[in-house]
Length: 364
Ligand code: GDP
Image 1 (cartoon, rainbow, N blue to C red):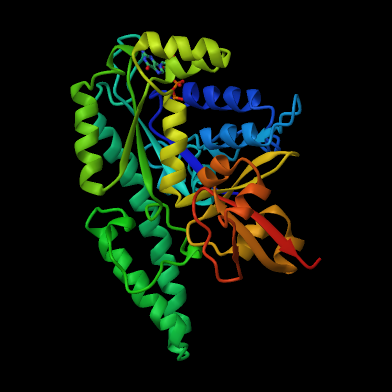
Image 2 (cartoon, rainbow, N blue to C red; image 1 turned 135 degrees about the vertical axis):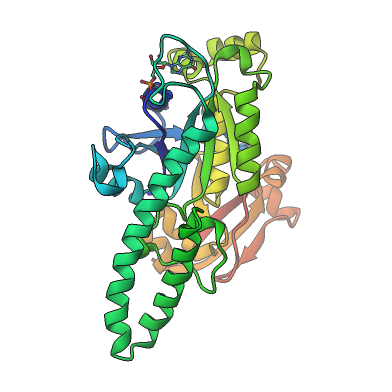
């Protein structure tokens, strides 16, 4: 599946955040996939559209269950200075981080004399650069090996290899300037098997103490400035508050958040930003049996969306009935929506939009 890896220096609040994630995931009993791995946590994507649709399809006391979609978070421990050379847990770290599709980089933006900082003082920009440097060095190392390989192949007049080598060299140039691979512009898409970590989009997670949830402190401001230059998103959270929230009922946590003066938990914000960063959208299947959200990449066509539900639906895809979720809510039923002419029939080339309600017709 698609995952977001949590990285950061030691003692910045990663475990606190990750524990909150796994506890929140354990509570989301409706989510159909159990946690796969002890370093993987699942957070459901908050989506009020599902409740509205569930109301539409409620018959008496039969309320269709809501099945939200989710984002996977992977705890990637072991990043220390020298990780790119395989120091510490370096190798395991690199293997784990290569698997994820985006990175949530936790940055310490809280002061606490009781929590030792690895570098002796709290400086979020230094911290960010320490991690980024490790990742850039690891990518350079990997890419150099790759170039050696491609050189040999290119010699035997393999055109593809020659093109890939040119690409690898232009990425290497970006890395040598101390920049992450994602900062560059390239002639062709960077293949996944280059195994580059700094090509992945980053979300900076500024971990603050609770008094700075409503207002930024200087450290958060510095992180925002740094991220803006990279075009990266920032989510401000308090890992400790998230840990407390993960122990509460939905009603309790609502009240607690209101007392703190914030509208949305940090985790909810992180999930939403993560979803967007991964280029994901949601389509919905909806009826009396259940109301369910499904995740696809932006740009996926109707058969691909059908394949998320079941591979047979993709193989046997004939057409799809499509209606925007809010039109469905307004119509109040499939029959009514149809008689109003709001249900479209779309074929194989239809690009599914966020919030579409689909009904797939399949020949299998
Ligand atoms: P990790 O090494 O990055 O996984 O960091 P931990 O989650 O283990 O956190 C290190 C220490 O910092 C723990 O004692 C946490 O309780 C503490 N900590 C985490 N977040 C905060 C925070 O927002 N404020 C304060 N004061 N302490 C925090």
